[in-house]
Length: 95
Picture 1 (cartoon, helix red, strand yellow):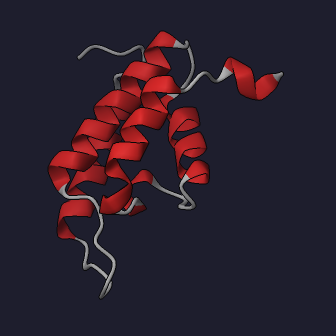
Picture 2: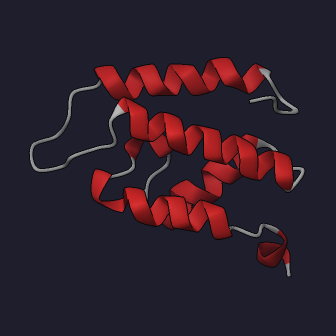
């Protein structure tokens, strides 16, 4: 996938690696590497389509789901995160 900001690809992949290798808290199941990678690709797509930075999309998504980083999203929220990103319209946040 080509994005306007290919420099973020390395950061995205690092986030995936962190998600795979981090220790999980008891009772809290976080996204696995494949789920996180899918979200990162969707974040890049949303950013490209809406002519904004992927960091903006990540920030809005993290705020919506109560985490500072998409790597901290809970596995039980995965489907809802996908729906949120597909329907996200950043221009509605400004008005």
